[in-house]
Length: 406
Image 1: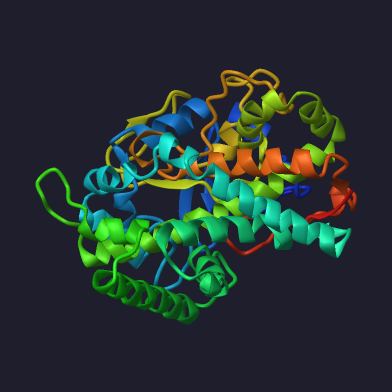
Image 2: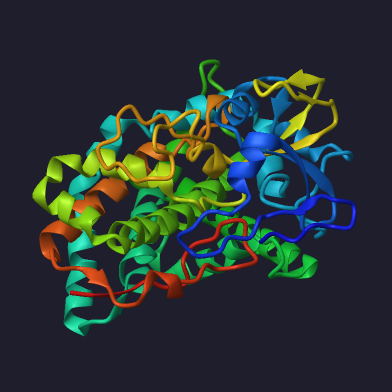
């Protein structure tokens, strides 16, 4: 159970009874307290939203913004000098560029059509990584052998950064997603080091451009002929490396875990591979540990569909994972339905700040699942699901490891 503070607020993030189970408080909060007072790791207070309609409004209503999180009265996630990823120098640089303008300049490279063109390369990478698993023998760790390296290879190739730097990216990502694992000094140092790395990379591509996304963004302009600033270019590279491998690696691991935790799900996909696309969407909805949630700052009093009013000046935590299990929005919300349609989950957010890279994440998940079903039809967990553990102290909560056999 989640710890209750002396002032009666819940400590956030909420604790969960198991790595594949949601917090026990979700049903009661959605029913009786859809806008709950919580205390963040920094000690600041925020309002937690757990109902689907409330979360969807908070993510898309212009009265609640991400940019407002830099205000002095906004709640901080951590007490570190650099703050969290939501109000970091990276986020500030992107906000200064103008979110709508930045999205338009970058969005053209993340269409479903462009992502589909990446499938042969993603498939070849997955095949090679599965070969490595087979060569080692079982039990093998899906995280180390497949879920972490594949998104790194894909995003490094797309951006044109050396795969050999992936351990540095992993460290910087962990620090950027810090809740309680790193000190303020370590956070500040990582922000500087990552920014310096990207600045050097961009300078090199200005001199010797290649066929990669960063080289294209350097020469790209908006509708008025203005290029992206150097600070925004560096921050864009950081954001894409962060989101392009950390979160996708977590989704890949959980996808395999939840499909094998009840092996009838795996068998159903073996029997009917046409369900792969809808199964991926259901995994994204069902996964109870999609991370901290998205923060929004309330600029003026706003009534949410549950009837509560969010006062101006409030920092809101939008729990997309809790919203995705709302029985008011999904029939059989706590059950997996691999053929569920429609599936309007909020895992990638909603509105102007919805995840720009979601076509890439979907493409990777579908491609990897297709390869695993073909190459390892007898795949199974090598441990009891109850023994799986999540990484603690970060905004994301990926599985530490996922031992499998075949």
